[in-house]
Length: 293
Length: 199
Figure 1: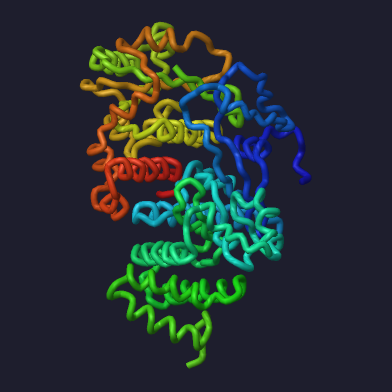
Figure 2 (figure 1 turned 60 degrees about the vertical axis):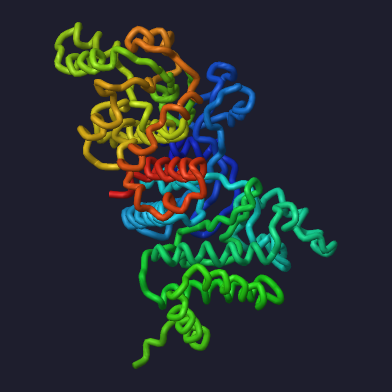
């Protein structure tokens, strides 16, 4: 904003300048970026200048290098003007760290999540593996509507037109080689794996799940609200949040959600009963526990 | 040798030169030379340190090129932000690779050892520095091979041990060896990337 143009930009700011924005929310902006390039000397690369003009060098494919050239998804928690700068800094650092920690825990527990590729906590940047695919929300009926007021999952950007011909009744799931039932069961299984590792996602919705184009695997994304907990209550609320999300975004969601629960139950084994009981309680009272009494 | 460009960093960190040497037979001598260079004084010492100004990474603990590149990026970032935990960007690469916070352990495990047979030699510098491969060959006696050769060099047992992956559900449930290696690779890359915030 009012920052003077003479201060040299930090590496991460330069990186963000070269990145393409994917979506923006109140907490963070999401970019697609390349951390490194090959074919040095082939292209005149304008490096860092005071104004940070960086040409987006995209000669990766042509250089014939065998090194990794995959893009990354950058989640940038930009500075919030409404907070005191030192509070803002420590909150941002803590949140980046928290999200990275939750992702790593998931990876170690075998939950399908994107891998971490780059972290700059001082700048509020988390770089994760770019998933080529679509969010589950876009793949289910009703999900493509009003998509601009919601956070768009990575990879959705080019898919909008396609998703809008939903009236033609072409099931978008076909291209992934997955049936709707299989998809629901993958969702249930991944959530169960995550809960078995005592990780609570905190914001389970169909937009926070993606289907990978290459493998047809499901991946859970956006662990910004995730935390560690062994409490049945937290797991039940996690499921309840998803149930509400299903109900509000996809018509006739009851059979879909019950196949999610079926797969969840199968994976949880004997731990299911307590969660089931608690989920019923939560359904009656809502996600917040009464503070009275 | 491969050259990678990191345009986001200050000019003295933009170019990364990486070469993979196999059949290295002067590892012990090279290690002794590096140790000696640290204590030399005067212009002679500076020249020797410049000649050895590389990161020497034992290739058997590197699971993929991206693993090494991630460590290089994080080390470059620390150098650019003046938050290096070790003395140079090259030693910082070794520290970034190591799951623990102990610097001497990082150098012992991930750096060159007397028995190293395969080595990654890395130089992070400005794009104007020339004949880097020549200089690498001048120090390491071995054969330079394409980075993809790495697949045959990885000591997966040691990787699992050092990263404490033997008891992790993700590794135990892997369907086959290839899947297991892909999972381990993803976990170690993620650990390297997020090391700075793990505390």
